Amino acid sequence: MVEAWVSGLTWREIMMDCAMDEGDLARLLRRTMDLLVQIPKLPDIDPVLQSNAKTASNIMDRPPISELAG
Image 1 (cartoon, rainbow, N blue to C red):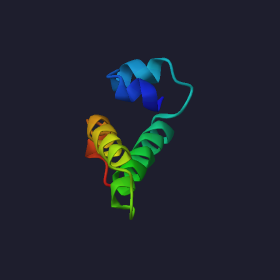
Image 2: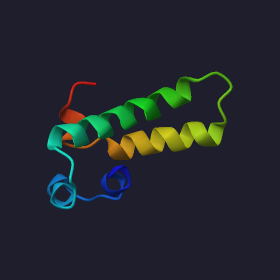
Image 3: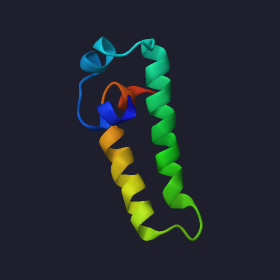
């Protein structure tokens, strides 16, 4: 589901193919984003990993997930 969200599928498209409840999916995506935001803050983190985590969290940050309190 995370890969589908990052690839640009709409919320409606994902929910049509997903057996998860909307709230569970939203929580999964929000927690994944929260984890990605924390990675660059780790000490001695590889710059490539830092950049990839920032890019991924930015791509994931779109409605309705971006509208949830983080």
